[in-house]
Length: 280
Image (tube, rainbow, N blue to C red):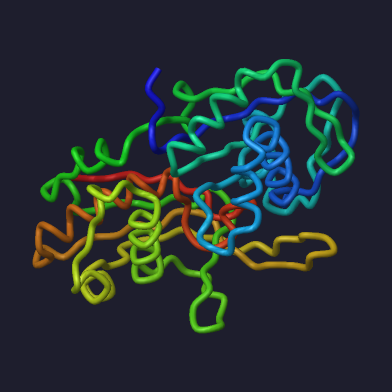
């Protein structure tokens, strides 16, 4: 089996006891990810933990199977019932981490602890689920098409926010999204997949228009870590016809990349989970 550069896996767990978790439990699932990673590659876990650089992974919050965001909008806690199943998602942006995820999936009888509640891992889905998948950077480049990327939507599955000029920005402006996605792409992709254009940031700021949006803001209670404000929902965009094809192709690749990279800050700990739609 050839390991891919980019991997998103849905992890299914069964509760071993009753309890409750905060809706904003991304810090707990993040800690769980590092515990699992340490079991298969302690050196990699240490390097990631000690690094102050961009993180090559995202981790979602744990939620009940088939949970809907609108059902949890005003809730602060998830009730956990023994024997019931729950899920969370990990996505990674390097081959080394993709290999580690597969090594984790081969471990037997794994139990994890989230905020004093015990769970057993009962499955890891790499390809079948809507939020799972694996692909190489070169594969995404091969899919780029300047003609098919006129309009698109970004769907913010978990609370999202941006930090810019010491401010918390609660709207998905293109100039806050795509330059950072490009930075993350170039940081983690193989050298022959690098994408650059000196005019990229300026064109993004002036040539992608918001056509519609349905967004809601949420106060995220992180307990002793305080409260953050984020937004969720959908935002739709249109690219001006005057945008050069090369820039359109980069935009197309980055939209597909966002499925693995997340958007905004806090994506390693539950925020910025994203899906997308593209209209020709």
